[in-house]
Length: 373
Ligand SMILES: Nc1ncnc2c1ncn2[C@@H]1O[C@H](COP(=O)(O)OP(=O)(O)OP(=O)(O)O)[C@@H](O)[C@H]1O
Image (spheres, rainbow, N blue to C red):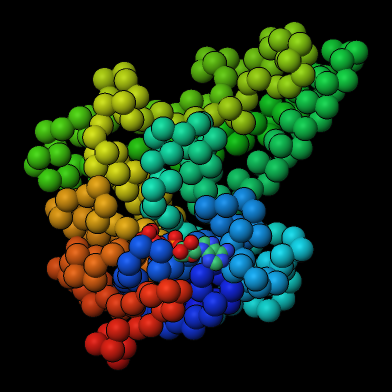
């Protein structure tokens, strides 16, 4: 799926923009503070209903404006629209009809983001990595969304009982049975996907340039922790943890505590790898996620904020090569047009003819030389 047309209004410093995008690479260049990241943030809002920089919609609305809108036409025939008003209200529309939830947006527009926050996949909490794994399972296994919903509902019920205190074991065990049933489904789907993810990451890391193949990056191990002891049945584990859960007032084990771990020789990868090596690991993870989604038919769109930062020319080219195999479209930002477009130029068509946009004080214009492509 690719965006063919994008309209923004009152999105941070972008008062208004109407952009025709190309399948393949769209490069947005401009000086610091010109509005490049804001443009990617707007596309992210279109795919998720929220910003990747702020939980507060208000801070994203242009100062002095009453609300923002983002609208896109996709090559799949879908149109998506998000409106956020400064009073906190908002609307999401798919094909101009109101959407029930933001997860409907995600189904229409699978999106991968690589930006400075992406490092949190290595140094952030388990929730960050869990969400990455779940994004992939959600797009690949359509039964996952319901299994996860059932699990969360049973979890809420058990937690409410735990907080109430005086409850009979019989009552708890009813919810534990439901929790275990849905939790086992969530875990099964996640684990099957994880195994595929690890296999694709291994293939990608085998393509690293010689210098990196001799680095700790080549020895990264990825493991999955399901959220309770491996050899134990989930229902038995819940029963066993009852006493402590009652004391704490919440369920301390289960798939809501799952994690992915990236390690080198038993140490966390973030404490061994250089910053550039970490970025390549994150790029391999994001690419592997996209490859799995792509195998099921939907090629994701990649948003890449400042690709050249932290990566040398070889690694930028390798990443561009990875992306060209699993993405429908890339929106990439950088300060300089030449360095930002260079990694794509040796790829086959359409990747080798990026559409170039110039961003200045919130105004986005297509460079005359690429307008006709
Ligand atoms: N709500 C808002 N209303 C108006 N302007 C805003 C708002 N929020 C942020 N800005 C401004 O919008 C500008 C665009 O920021 P953005 O992060 O998109 O720039 P950028 O081109 O990605 O810069 P850099 O190269 O430094 O990362 C900044 O000058 C910022 O101060």
